Length: 258
Image (cartoon, rainbow, N blue to C red; front, side, top):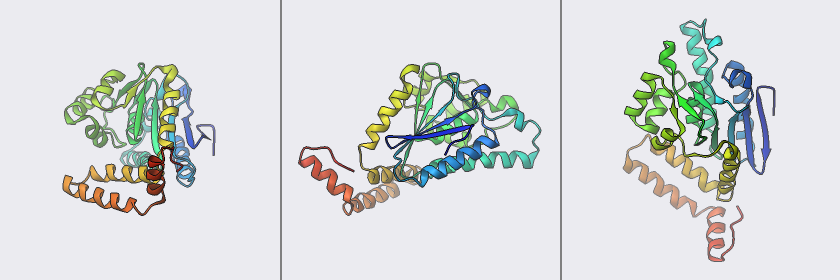
């Protein structure tokens, strides 16, 4: 599936998804959200895809935010509907149980762009990346999960500072806060993400899917409940083909074939 505003291709079990509005710094509007949602539906139904890399077209922005021109004339009901369209896409990204999603962040990741990046499992930035939630300067709150995901990633104090000032942070501070996993050169960004993807592809898809589920579900549980869930999932792994192949390969000193 491909169209003018969201480009999509598969290479070596990796789906490359590009938000393609470089003249608007890849700003998110209803059309982009719908196209991106359709893309996520297709990826979810394709068992051959193991990793998804989301990036923005051009070299100025990952996604500079939501489209202010579209939001300018919204009333309360319109604002609610606009937020729901974006959140529906976030839910589709998080529902990719069998794929790891990487955000390749080059340039601006602001507002809805940062919120979308935070929905991804892994975030890789470049030295020119700027990350922030500037909505308070527009008279609104972040409307696509920003007030909920940001403090879970960086802590409440840093989240309140970023949201209340609206000032973007650079990639180095984002890495220190745990908002991004790594900072690499602009020239190496896609190569780094692709190499990371291939490391993921080499491991058990069943085990990775189970780990992803455990991590996200565990964040909403008490530690003892989370450990109990992990123990049960660990035990169930011993009924899988992947467990037999992985451990036999280790003993036989060969690479596992998942």
